[in-house]
Length: 202
Image 1 (cartoon, rainbow, N blue to C red):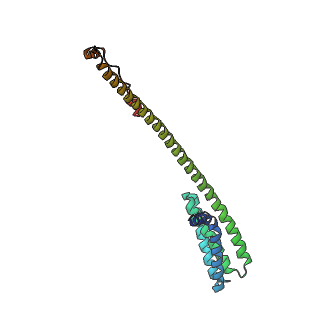
Image 2: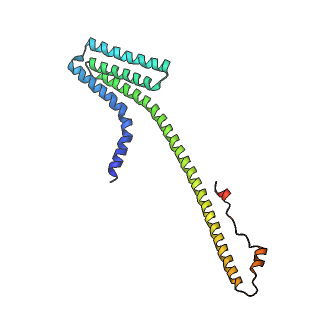
Image 3: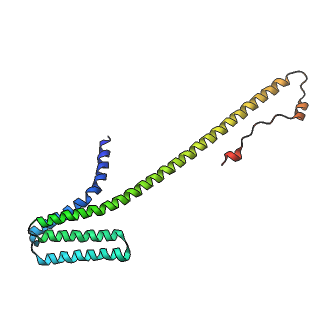
């Protein structure tokens, strides 16, 4: 019963780690397919990929300088590198240069991804620490309230036992000769212990 859950959990952890290599490998494979279908030594196709890669790099530079948006910058430079890799893989007649660029692109992709993984891990740890502190605080409040409720119940029990004992004493005294209820009223009955509801209500 637990095996499918473990498998999904393992895949969920492994998928982000494999994403950069899968992405660069996919670009390399598509570039080589393009090479086999007429892109080899095609100046027009090479010029197109150079223009697209340059445009993506320009967008990344503008986003980094003026906008300061790291997400757009990373996406634009990633697209620029992928287009450059695809262009070389499609134009070159051998596989040595495409493989070299694939290795370089994969290394750079993992370097950029590691930065975001560290940031995400720090945020996750900070969130888990905050949740643990909140749970501990709530548990402490629950323990205090449980002790306070137990004290109130104990005081109520003592008050009930005191009232029962007093009623039994008065009943026993009433049957004795010479009992004067008026004298008892003038003297006054002992006061019962009170629950400090003002203190316990907060």
